[in-house]
Image (cartoon, rainbow, N blue to C red):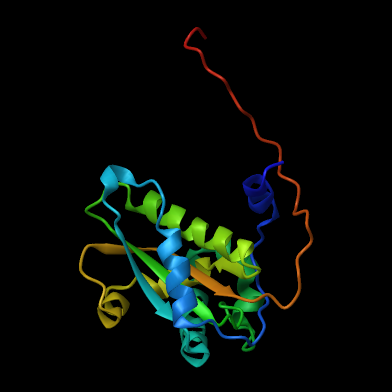
Length: 192
């Protein structure tokens, strides 16, 4: 197997981080490498907000949890997480030292796809350098609001795509992840 295939198959979502910080230079280098993705019409529709203040991230975590709990009845898919969301010690950012929030310019039809590839590249780059990453779905409710985008200085027309945490994992993960569930591949030649 080639190195890239191994890297892809070994990548895991990391939910436990050491106290070691990441420098602005390191984070900038990761982002500068992550943006080298194919993108629709070469629009390169991304914009980034980086937060490294853990207390601020904890405040955002508490706000997100409160919001989800207030809307639990209308979000049945989140009911399985109710216990965690009610736990005052649970931090949706897992005490990671850095959060990279990726916004996409909605004028680009493919902004969600383009920015999602950037987010995945961040995961692969973290894995390659011995770090961990995790896309935080629980943060979508707070970082997608108009008010939050204004606070961050995000221009109108940009939409939240991916909040990704980065840092050094507290332990190495197993070399083999969960097996893939069965799926089908259908080769179509037009004759069917």
